[in-house]
Each structure stands twice: as C-alpha cells, then as structure tokens.
Amino acid sequence: MEAFLTANLAPIMFAVLVLFLLSGFPVAFALAANGLCFGLLGIELGLLKPELLQALPNRIFGIMANDTLLAIPFFTFMGLILERSGMAEDLLDAIGQLFGPIRGGVAYAVIFVGALLAATTGVVAASVISMGLISLPVMLRYGYDRKLAAGVIAASGTLAQIIPPSLVLIVMADQLGRSVGDMYRAAFAPGLLLTALYAGYVLALSIFKPAAVPALPLEARNLRQPNGDSGVRSLLVLVLGAVAAAWLFAHYWGERHPAMASDELGIAAASLGIVGAFLFALLNRQFKLGLLSRMAEKVVFVMVPPLALIFLVLGTIFIGLATPTEGGGMGAMGALLLALFNRRLTLDLTKQAMHSTTRLSSFVVFILIGSTVFSLVFRGVNGDLWVEHLLSALPGGSTGFLIVVNLLFFALAFFLDFFELAFILVPLVGPVADKLGIDLIWFGVLLGVNMQTSFMHPPFGFALFYLRSVAPKEVKTSDIYWGAIPFVLIQILMVALIIGFPQLVTVGKKVDMKEQLELRLDSPAPAAEEHKDGEQPPLNFSVDDEKK
Image 1 (spheres, rainbow, N blue to C red):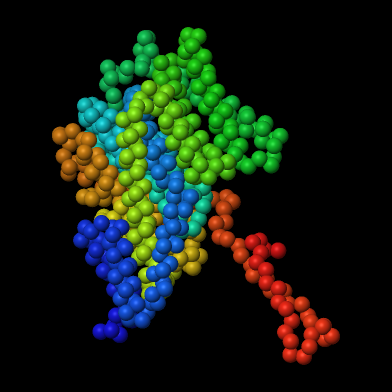
Image 2 (tube, rainbow, N blue to C red; image 1 turned 60 degrees about the vertical axis):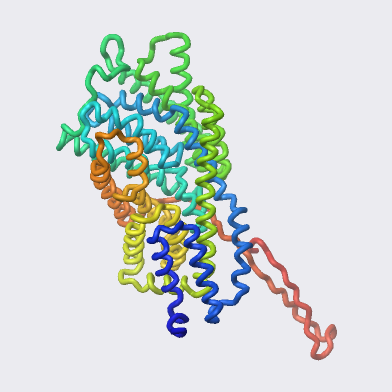
C-alpha cells in the first residue's frame, strides 16, 4: 500500500480535490486542506522534506504584494458604482429608442449596451442585474419571446468576462505570467466578434421567426420629433462628421509624426471625434440652435460619458501611459465623478459598493492562498510532471491538447466559477501549453472565452441566478434555462473559431514579463610568476540584470 501511494500520490491528490469540490466544501479551504494533508502524507512517505512547507509564508506574502491583483478591487468598485449611477438605465432607454423601429430592436440594444457595460464595468453581476431590471419588463410588455429575452440579457451580461477590463483576464495574465495590457489587447477582437455573433442570432430570428422579436410600437417611441420624424438622419450626419474629423486628424497628424504608434494615434483620433460631437451637441442645446434632433442629443449625451471612461481606462493602458492597476484607479475615480454628476452618489451607495468590493476581493485572495498551498505540495510530489506527461502524450499534438483542455474546462464550468478554474487548472495546463509552443496570451484568451460559459451553464450558471433574482414571476426558470442554451452554443462556436483561426487573437509588441538574469564568471589567465605552484587564481563573480 505504501509503495502504491508513493508511486501515485499526485493523481490521488487531484482525485481527492475533485471529491472535495463536488461535496460543496468551500473551495479556498478545500484547496488548502487538501494541500496540507497531502503535504504531511508526502513527508511521512519520504517524498517531501518538511522544509518545503516553510516556503508557504513567503508565497502568501508574495500574493499580498502582487500589484497586478490590485486592479481587481478597483475595477469591481468601478462597476458597482456605475451600476447604481443610472448609466445602464439611460443607455438602454436611448439605444432602445434608436433601434426600436426595427424587429429585434430592443434585443440589439441589450447586446450593444451589454458590450458597452462590459467595457466600463467588467462585472457580470452588475450588467445582468441592471439589464434584467430595466429591459426585461419592456421586452415582455411588447411581445418578445420569453426564452429569447432571458437568454439575450444573460448572454450580453457575460460579455464582461472577455471584453476588457475583464476580471478573469487579469487573473489569467497573473497565472500565466503575461502582461495584463497584452491580454486586454488580444481579447478585444474576440469580444467584439462574439458580440456580433449574438446580434447575428437575433437577426436570424427576426428573419425566420419574426413574431419572437417584434419592433416597438409607434406609441412607445418617445424621442420622435414633433413632425413624427425619428431623428435618425440628424444622428447619422453627426456621426459621419465625427468620423470624418477623426480620420482627418489621424491622416495629417500621422504624416507629421510618423514615429507615433498606430494604436496611440487611433485612440487620440477617436477621442477627438467623440469630444467634438459632444461639444457640438452641447452648443446646440445651450444656444437652442435646433441643428440636432432629440434622438441625436439623447444618444450623444448618454453615450459620451461611458465612452470617455473607456478611453480613460483602456486607452491609457493600451498606449502605455498607465498600468492596469493605475487604469483601474482612474476608472474608479471616474465612476465616482460620473455618479456625482448624475446626482446619485450617496453615502449608502458608496458603502454598499465598498462592502461588495471587499467581499469579492477577499474571496479572490482566499482562493489564491488555498491554490498556492495546493500547487506547492502538488509540484512537490511531481504533480506538474504527471499533468505534463498526461496532456503532452495526447494524440493530435497541440490540437489534441487544446481540444481536451477545453472540454475539461467546459465540463468543470458546470460546477466551478471562473476564479476557481483560473486558480486551480490554469497553473497546471499553462506550462504544458508553453512547452507545446502555444502562445500563452492566445491560450489565455481562448480559456477566457471558454470559461465565459460557466456563467451560462444550466442549471448552475451564475448569470442565470442573477437574472432569476430580478425576473418577474411570469418568466419561469425553465424559460431562462432554455433561453441560455443557444448562446452557450454560440460561445462554443467562438472557441472553435479561435482554435481554427488563431489570427483572431493577435498582439503586436508583447511585454516580456520574464526577468533576465545572467551569471558571468570572469576567470583571467594566471601569469606563471604571479602564483605559486598549486595556488588557484581568484574568480570574479558578478550578476548582470541585462544581457551584455
């Protein structure tokens, strides 16, 4: 028996962890208890030395000193403040009116606002609850299919998982040892493509099942002009003017500053166009010029604040002016100012946001501490080598590895949330992916899209629980579950597209997160007259931080 345990301690340790998790025991304590118990067993069997567990305090202090993880409470606080600042309500009202005349217009508005909230909040719960409270009653009132209404709200809320500033991408970058900024850049295109796939599904329904996605009736469109015109043409002219101004600036400024990076030039040009449109709308309202319709004014004044926040946070990260932690700090301050501007910043609101942020941050830190205890002992009993041999021996090479890993993540997402998956499994499969030659940023984005399904899996998806908590009684739980299934299939399709077309996830110039350390030994040739027979020449040891 002792010989069997010695030879198979790593797989036994992993199997016991799975049993712990399936039993419903808190994940953080299950990880820590599993690690400590098997650590003591490994010491008893002679596989580990007691000194190994003395490394735990240093590893825990390293977690507390990790600046990257500090971005999590900042972005969480920003999302919770924005949820209560009225931004989501204003966006859904304005965009719903804009798309209202076409079939599925409210569903398109939910998807568009979901993507915009994802780029400003990064918190799934905030997006799903806000849109569930505001848009679900409207969709039901005007005859939308209940399953579609529930599914599109839950799925649009989960866009916060993959569109920066996503919390899961911060964790993935930390666990894989890559730059958060690079992970954000790489995830932007897949996030927008997934948004387009959601909209494509609504478009297909509007063609083949039009009764499920009706247009808003005429009496519900309250932003029309006095003569009955929708005012969309005025908005279109303003948008074209802003785009033209941005293009002209990018063209002429780029010619005069050829050394300027393309992403920096694009962000500056887009900022100029947006600010120009906002100032034009402000002057039109202030001096009552009558050049813009009610629809155009409403969309501009509602859209610009979140767009400004996006450029403040993501723009400064992408062009290298701020780290993700600094960007999160600026985003939190921007959210407070936006809530103050909307006259919704109260002491109770701030206390609630701080309380929820503290709970989530503590949850993350405890899971990370537990996973650190587990991974230290698991590596000590050569568990990493067992996982590497198990996964690298799969048929099909890197493709077979990717298929099996994604199936594993998809299956475990029924029972674990994305934090638990990221802290438990990613440190095990990441080194194997690196040895197989898979780019870890691409791999992190792929797993991020996969783990997005953890919020949509019936019957345990958190997004479904969030929506159930705010949905009216006429929406059955089965309606929410059946409505989520098509969007889970779309997310699986997105995973397949990333594997089949890896160029969808690209990063230009990556930040090297590895420390370069070179040990140089200078051994001068000794002169015969300077040393006695048998005397060794002196050696000069020096450590260079950079390669010469």
